[in-house]
Image 1: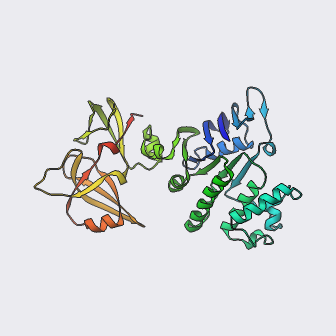
Image 2: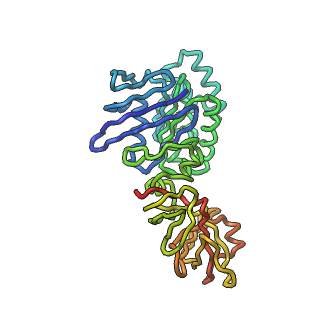
Length: 351
């Protein structure tokens, strides 16, 4: 089953222009709050009507402005789960899941399958207030999938949960995707969640899809500075490329192949920078500069280190795991060599 969507429109003062495609995969719509992710989901679900374009799932046209096709939400065969799960407080778990399809033998068979897959066994008679947040989200997922659907739409469904529950539900969602073999469109503004879940990522900003590509391509090869900023590239510089090289704050850098010529934006992810002890008897190799640590931030298993160059070179952020950090013994007034490997530099046309 393939989702193909190309639509545009306006909601109040907000305009959007969205192109998406997903085929039996988990597509993450990623961007900051207010970027237009939920509007895209609502348009696919039939809750917002675009002014132009079309939306297709498989061989079914859900919306086509040119021909006047606009299927109502109940005919689109989409499951839709939002952050506020909206379970009926007076109904038990089973009735919440089967509401509207109580007499369907097929729906009851699917509920039996979903009950096991989502670890909801023994909870049929409980009311929503008797469930944990994670259990409520599992019930909402079951309700969205108990009817035959061609597409599952999830709007930040785990954002109100603690990290341990979110990790469990992400794993269960990936298993459901494999079991049901349908495209899933998942909205989040959490960069880590996008990285953990996505097969493909659509980076959305101000109602526009800036990049739609496999997850690793989005995180390793953003096409422009704004995408790099949104996807966590902390080291970004303006430079001018010529003959495969560029200068940043006086540091001459070798660029990756096909680095282009002229004004560029240059970036490198902090975890791709390499940190070495400084040896005064050995001059720094190519694409390296010497600097001193000016700030250190620790979070879990990672340490974010910010360095100020001794002479030429940019101020730069380096991320290292706890073990290398401990072995290096970073700190004090020591000098360090920071390497920017050419293969990890991201060259973008100047925005």
